[in-house]
Image (cartoon, rainbow, N blue to C red; front, side):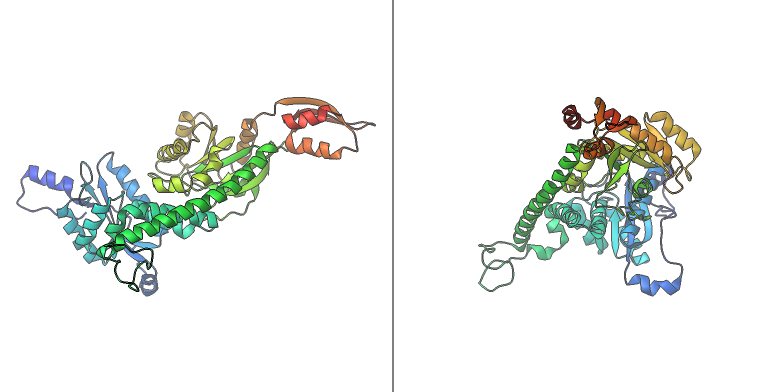
Length: 461
């Protein structure tokens, strides 16, 4: 633990000083031990110091939050040199941890050789500016770190557009905090550097020019995302017209959603032990044991305090969840706080108006989870199943539950299908459920259930 106590302090003063001291969080440093790698790794990794404020809850909860911040930093390609926490009633409105502790943080940055400080919270523009002036290295907050990871992992045109929009929404009010050069004047004579003809005005600053340029870029991205959303909406309408129910896999990042999709459909989706490995939604066809078709989609993972900018930017993609008939809410059973994962995801589901969609909680990684934790979750969750996407344990039970909870087909039929109407027979098997089949001299006698549109066609036979 880092000590900042003076020897002459009274007991009360020591207690106050101890409460406000920066406490080192053990076990989060990823400093390299193999010196043969150092020269290579230094070329590609930022060295970071993590700093957090413990203002509520237990210290264990704060440590878990800092551990997640360390995972995020490593996912972004950084090397964690140190991690510290300060006990405060609330973050300092001016400098996040207070001016005195900021000076101490500066010394820790110098001692570790770090080039970046990452704060476990969202900084205001003024906090960002003041912290950088004191520690004299780049300062980023948790929100910008997550946005950076999303930018690295986005692959599709839609995903890249959504991340770019979220980054611009975050940056716009913080432009002043990214360097004093942004306040330079750009207006003046023709041919001067800056925005050029049409972007200059009397006394216009570079900051104003940058804000206007970002505003135009955001408007363009919103139009592009809207156009891509129309295409996605058309696909969803086509599936609904065919009465194919949709199941959405959602959950905390790195809980095993993609592994579960691969296990259920052989989709071959990227599986990586990394936060936010999947950003672009994947939709696959699947069948129940009785042969009923449904679609199943893998969506972006959530995290505690997911930046609002990301939720807004990814809203069109997340509509796959809100528009589904069933949500498979995947939770990592081996995580120290699975209830916290469930709560964080449900907060986002509420924000995207998907809280009313039927939910099946899937406790994944049951092969590595404490049985007591699984029993505890089963006791408190109404609709739950434990599986292992890695080993296949519990998958059959999960598929049976999915089939049971898909929307019921409403129309009972008992119809004789002539042999020259094989197309209708195929549609019954694809869109409906067959309870009994009998091949006769005149055709195929079918007893079962089908969607309303198909039932009306069969009435005409």
